[in-house]
Length: 64
Image 1 (spheres, one colour):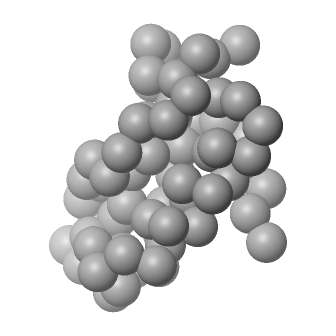
Image 2 (image 1 turned 180 degrees about the vertical axis):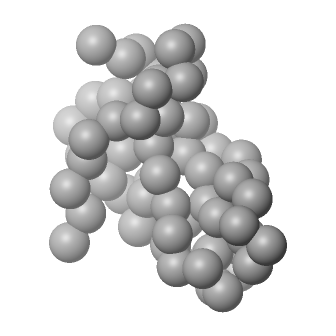
């Protein structure tokens, strides 16, 4: 299991950009994804993702 998650947002050109890194505890990842979706960086795409900082694998997190 990941210790830290790298939060990224997709820009208007389809490129994934770094937003922040959070520890994978409780609701940290979910809250960080919600903040990322509300950021100016994600304004055009409306997409954010969480990746394992060590392996780069996508984390399966449900954000409602």
